[in-house]
Image (cartoon, rainbow, N blue to C red; front, side, top):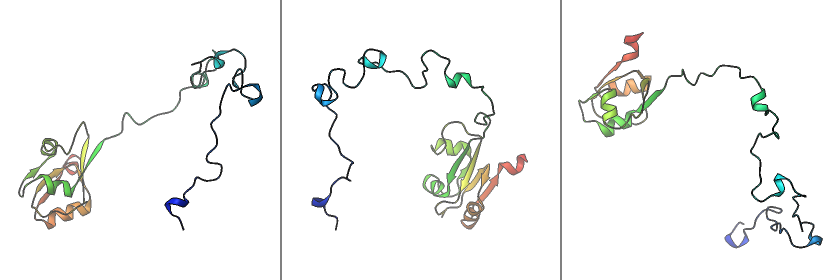
Length: 154
């Protein structure tokens, strides 16, 4: 039975702090385990990760090859049905500009996709680039209309 007064750390999880400079017999006296002289023996002396003592480091010796799609990927903003329910009145026209005005979309994006999370009780006229099948069904069931811009572009 685990209770508050029986809690204790795992065996070996806690050990005493290393006390440096406490006499030669401690094994960590005088130079405190840092050896004699040199950059790493000085206070505040440390070398950055990847430094190889002035030799050209590995990350600069290796060739830069390959392709990264980060710069070309498309950014699609997702909007849920429950957000439309909360921010728009019945009969409202919902486009990307109205979503930006409501604060549901921020920054740059290539497209807007409507997802089916939540319930919709209002008839809305929604114009977005993409929509899931379930979201389209929920808008139709509420008596609204859904216009997809991606279908017009293709």
